[in-house]
Length: 92
Image (cartoon, rainbow, N blue to C red; front, side, top):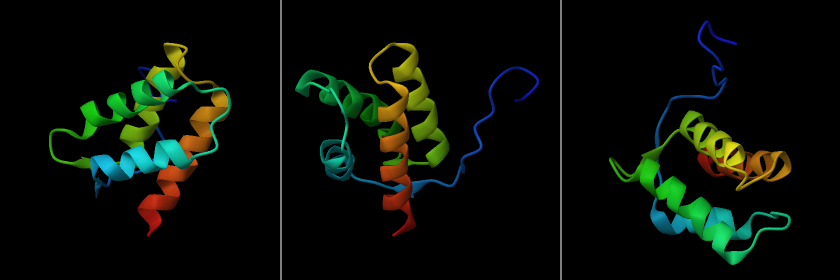
């Protein structure tokens, strides 16, 4: 924990990722109890984050998911599952 709150343990190294790749990760991840509308909301949140340079870091993924959890869009299980899917994608 940082002085002013949560500090993500994930890398700031950015990876190129297309919109289609984000959509594939979200749609193929075994997410429990997520409607199509929620899936689209998750994809939009990542699109906003990557629109500046077409890149995402694991830290950004973690921050987006934490915000979505705070807004009750995803639960802890979905958050961990999606984060793991991005980790796997970035390792390629």
